[in-house]
Image (cartoon, rainbow, N blue to C red; front, side, top):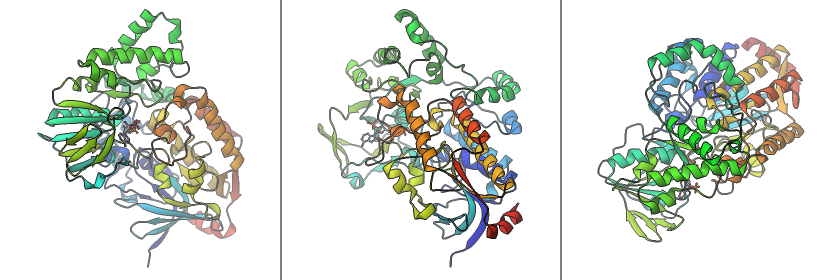
Length: 548
Ligand code: NA7
């Protein structure tokens, strides 16, 4: 017999989003249960424990603003945080707001079924529990489903195998080993310099070259942290109105094309010294709008690659030519290109010598077999929608979310989906999500969801659902904004191109955190325009009242 429990809300996942969502909903008086597949909070930062894992948004910005107590007390050690620091931070937040007792760790949600008559969801876990709730809050993350490449013979390999997104908790020692790393996205570019320090030989298996900028990571000076702390309330307000959701880099106001080539290169040199990618992205307003502006920056970075990497044949292979800079995530690194000057590191271009198969001893490319002791897959994720489509979610009339999104990914304002009443997604498709400071966008969505539930409860409403028309119009708007930019000029996980058979489409709102916030505020001011609000069914009233 399955145990059945009734609560107001179930939160799925306990990274940044889930931890804050539990706290928010409980502070509204709701009873909450949360489920987490990992053994601790942290989400993406719990699973991605690979060597070199760091954030590409500065620590003092990539942190919560909802609790002044937390932001005044927490000490960040580095400009860009290392994974263990971020993991510790999320754990500290969970402890401070005291939500751990509401979380079932090592437990996966496997299905969710909506009951129209009851206006409630039945949520089932892999431990056999069934929980009935009014609201499902999906804090399942953007990068939660690791992807292994579809290469013949993968299972035949007898050495060690790792995926960056499912890294073991114990440190992995590559000392003296021959290692191959597949993937040169943001993750591979962080892993390669670290593994190169230990491995006897490192083979970097590159399919597509990506642009990477120096992180310029460094310890934070206590006096700078103190100044930041004093300004935090003002900074957080500013960040909410910023295109990317940060307070420390102003928005761009001028075109790089106003400068001569020499002036532009001098400006780029300064930015290169400053480090980080947002300094570059915020310096000029046309990198992502004008191919000529984009090419100026791309040419500059390609020149830097050629200057850094001694072997010019290797440098040329590392230069990206097939996409505008920024159309895929711009990576930031610590010594990535310099790593190719080491004697123990070899770049294998899979464009020149494609992989034929994985063998028991290593990798067979068209140029022959490379024997290795370990393979690291930094091959990415079924991003944005994967975590949701891997749960068997059945909405109104039994319609499955995975089937609906197989045809076309749709969402109204990035937090709800037509056909799935009372299910809220934190930073879902159709919201700024990964094209913003994620923590800022998470906070906004948690507050939006909290406000929506409070609105429903105060008016005796039992269900809320986006209309099909509103959802279609919203996704058209998201596409229309993206189509005016160079974001749509590349294939990557941003548009689903990295997963065979996945519906293609650029579903990220790239109009800016500031404009997105205004769109949401206007929708609410118009009485949840584009959404159907159902009264609470009479048989549900007693239960709802009792739980408040
Ligand atoms: P990404 O950015 O999706 O990168 C995955 C990498 O793996 C990329 O270089 C892929 O090459 C490569 N890949 C994928 N499949 C294969 C096969 N079959 N053979 C060889 N190489 C392959 O994932 P990351 O984890 O690096 O970054 C995800 C996000 O995390 C990042 O954007 C930041 O927001 C943080 P491809 O480009 O497809 O040719």
